[in-house]
Amino acid sequence: MNIALIGATGRIGGRILAEALARGHAVTAISRHPEGLAAHERTTGLAIDLHDVDALAAALKGHDAVIYSFGPGFAFINAPDVFELYVRAHRAMIAAVKASGVKRLLCVGGAASLKTPAGVELLDSPDWPPQFKKDGPRGLRELRYMLAKEPGLDWVFLSPSTFIAPGERTGKFRLGKEHLLFGPDGESRISMEDYAVAMVDELERPQHHRERFTVGY
Image (cartoon, rainbow, N blue to C red):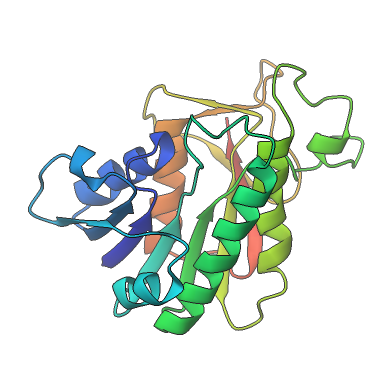
């Protein structure tokens, strides 16, 4: 497939890029700093301002799917306006995808909107890890709500488990829908590598349409 990946040099985006290339796909890697990409015959790096809707739409046109893995960058993750940074980026991305004519949109989501066993969204529950700030996750959660208002897009929003970190690519995990997944040890977690596997699995064999799903051990 011919994929456009927005945020290709991020921690999760980079792993999605590696997984897609390993499976033989061609990737247009869109990033603030594409010079950081490793050279690969099936990777085309593009530096595009995400808020330039016309330029982004032109870059996306003709692809089989768009994968969106936006992050504001470490310099901005704790900025007082980080929620607005997320929302502006989401709004521009959605407009560009619609203008490009690409129908399939796969979004890297967060765990904030997943429901706890008590039926409360994690971000609003006492179970939210206190070491994590809320404005960034709230901004990522907002994308979930924005996508629900776009009937013309075939979108998915893949939420990780509560804890996602670099780790092993096992290819062994479970999928869920609206509720957090917990492993036998009681932990809700997934490696970034296995998250990327789940995302590219969905790219290749679509099982979800206009909905969120989640991955965990």
